[in-house]
Length: 203
Ligand SMILES: Cc1cc2nc3c(=O)[nH]c(=O)nc-3n(C[C@H](O)[C@H](O)[C@H](O)COP(=O)(O)O)c2cc1C
Image (tube, rainbow, N blue to C red; front, side, top):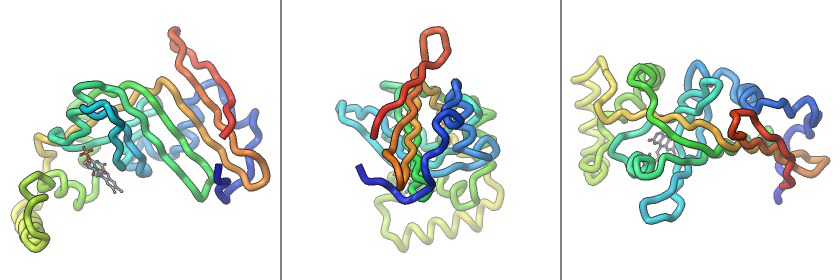
């Protein structure tokens, strides 16, 4: 285990509320209102192997973690086949890692539209032009297509392929590193009655 430089361990009692969503909100300040950090999104590939990539955390609504993608993507196909995923958010400078495992469902059309509106212009355009055909083009042709799109489409609505998903946690692991103590993880599991069990794991 590599101990990352960062803050010393927090008071374990103060940092371990009964509800992990409260702790997640403290670790993700402001993410209810706009784009959050990047995270590794892990799905189960159609071949049964793990499938992982980086995505932006679009929003944490206090319960679910939202992310957005192209409905033609591999991850969308994988989630259609098995709507389960894990996301890993890491803050090396703060010696923190959050891993959330759970069930994924599409967001509502209104939620998807609102998320598109918070994206930068670059990401809004990207959602339109990032397809298989463009991927196979030369870099200079991709630049030409981008410039033409920018010129012709000053106002943008989400494309039909804009797809939003939200992960509802079943398990949440909060890793806290320290320079002067062993790292540990607060682990929460959702119980059948909707409450959370809480445990501490090493590593
Ligand atoms: C920093 C960073 C942020 C990214 N954010 C997103 C995102 O929010 N949504 C997305 O679909 N792809 C995003 N990507 C691209 C994905 O990592 C991935 O290449 C793409 O979505 C295709 O993945 P798939 O073929 O597994 O579906 C991002 C990549 C990087 C490096």
